[in-house]
Length: 336
Image (cartoon, rainbow, N blue to C red; front, side, top):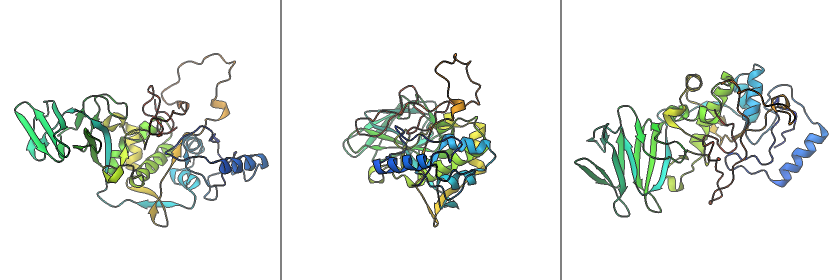
């Protein structure tokens, strides 16, 4: 990477920033510092010659405010790439609750083809090491894997791994034995539906359309290239270990429009999608309050929230968002 400070309208401060398991090594930090001191190649606009480990979301905002479209933003941050199309019928398997003793839900109209009542709360728990059992009023169904469908989405009771309590999710809910015991609850959803549940969880919905479009394409591409689940059991986590997915709760008019405007588009290099890392970066000086400045009134909904404090690693070493801001992905800009 030969990214130089000053090439972005919102230069990215990499120290302490975490973004999708990408680590800033010491040689890379030294190279960045030297490039900054020498003042090399201060770009006036996005170009494919400026390399980066990923997209700065504050930088994307800056370019969008300057009038650049999402293609120019993506080309700037993912050097040597273009826009390609995803294959038809792509689906994403998202882990919502992992290794739970019991999973409870409502909204289900069927389980493995057997009719259920959407208004009824059903529970699923382990039945031995390789089966799960669904229980409800006058209902018991045992299977190696359960696939539940609902006419208006499925509401998962309790706290999901994304920090959402009682969230509503589209697609089908797959319940299976977890590798270490318990039950995994996985949302199997079409690609575009998944992206609708990500964009506003990763970027404020009030930001310009070009920034939201760029976020939608980056999120879509990441979903198909992350391969987070061990043994292919699922594709992505719903929290900061991958990118935050909040289901129906994240759907807004502006971000849904961004998904539609970029439908099926991926960031590709030589015809293949790349792993589209992204991170918050830092807001520009004029957006940073002075320590001597009186507190400002509460910002309007369209004013971006400053990036959160970098999350601390969890017991497994994966970055976690602070409990007060569950919709922050690996140092990504916090949506309001």
